[in-house]
Image (cartoon, rainbow, N blue to C red; front, side, top):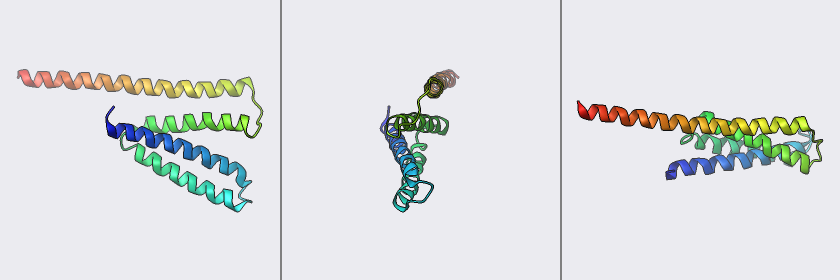
Length: 131
């Protein structure tokens, strides 16, 4: 993995953490009735989208957004269950597992498509050299 792609993934990770923090601030804003958490929510979401915007310079937007939203959903669900004592049900756990499987499948599909494209590119280069 080259340096630019690694930077993209680190920016994506930062975007996820910022989005998670913004969502926690959203909960504490209590419907915008508390000023500091409300302001913090907007700032954190702005920073999250900014980091996501930079990440998609080197990561396909379909992959970046799926990972961002999927992992964000997983992490905020865990925070909700553990920190805010939200009710956990088997159906909620199953639903979160499906999201995780979807994110993994998208990444595998992207990886497979990249390898296929590399093979096609190499084959075309070899054909051009023999002509």
